[in-house]
Image 1 (cartoon, rainbow, N blue to C red):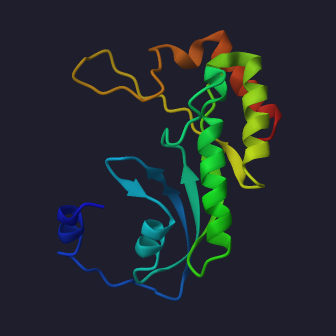
Image 2 (image 1 turned 45 degrees about the vertical axis):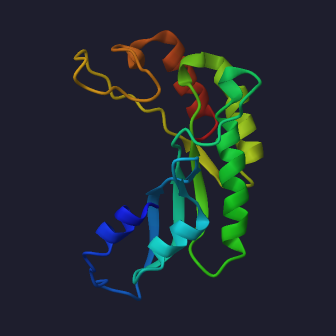
Image 3 (image 1 turned 120 degrees about the vertical axis):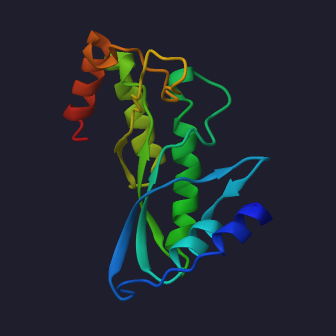
Length: 171
């Protein structure tokens, strides 16, 4: 985190309402880029700041994708990346990364099953499903989702087949 951002965050301190209440943080990201990083150290600094955060759920953020291989399988790199950090969190004294929500392109139709199987294998027992961002607007003034959805994505036959595969696997 940049010094400016850390200084800004330090301007306000809030007391925990119930510091003994165990909490599962249901949404966080992890990344390590040349511009910034948010890894276990930063997660533990945030989750250990007064509240009793004991578990967390990672949600996909297009981080650490595989750089080669089939395009559809590249998001599995993020699951591998997070699973390794989750193992480290289990050995630590801070919050444990208990679950991983990854990305798989449901527009692959039935072929998405191979991607889901790879996430399951990579997740070390923590893979719980996927998030397929779908925000879309015709206006060029609005930033559409990072998955580049179409206006009618949910209505397409391939997306619906992919969703059926996801459901058949219990996600």
